[in-house]
Image 1 (cartoon, rainbow, N blue to C red):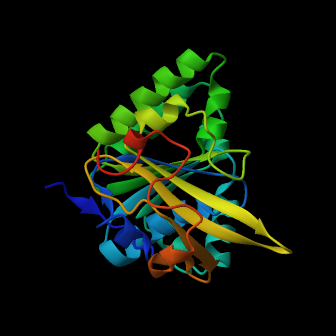
Image 2 (image 1 turned 120 degrees about the horizontal axis):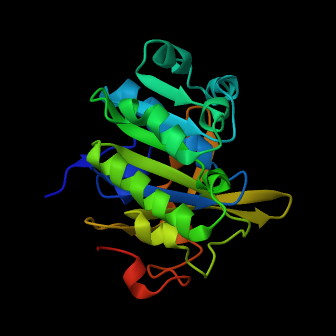
Length: 249
């Protein structure tokens, strides 16, 4: 039986039937404003606060101060304390984009990736990660190498990726196949407001609940409403992917 790493996100671990498989790399996709970065922050924050598991946060888009302000705004009051005492290590855009070369950037963080005090990692985002590479083939070679390093280092990782469409794209990128799981955060217009949903499309080595579940972003982060599946926008078989892309794999 696989070991699971709990996200600590209310409702999410339940629809994942226990959490994320240990050492997995999970892709979290969504259009802007759906909560991808918040989920990443919450995953690391809960790791320290609830499970005594350290984490690494890599961001190509924000500064360290930006991340601190974002964490504080959502109610993660101990974020700065966790960073100051080394239980959360933040690499911001000033560090990651300094060399303009991914090999050099990887060398910079490799020691921390292999440090046994860290169990979790968030990369925000793969969209910016692509700026290192001129050719798509090279980008995906390095992504595969990077994911292998994460697994070899014993890290259970969330990698975010931005998409322009409100709903998941019908054309699946190779990133979806290189990662162990695919989670989509969806924001659907509803009059003057919008409704938010989460859909776990695929998780290798574990059963999942494949409906689309409502979520809210509130003080303390994301909350998933598992019992609201009756309001799901799709049934048990999501229409955007072939049947073998969801459920148990």
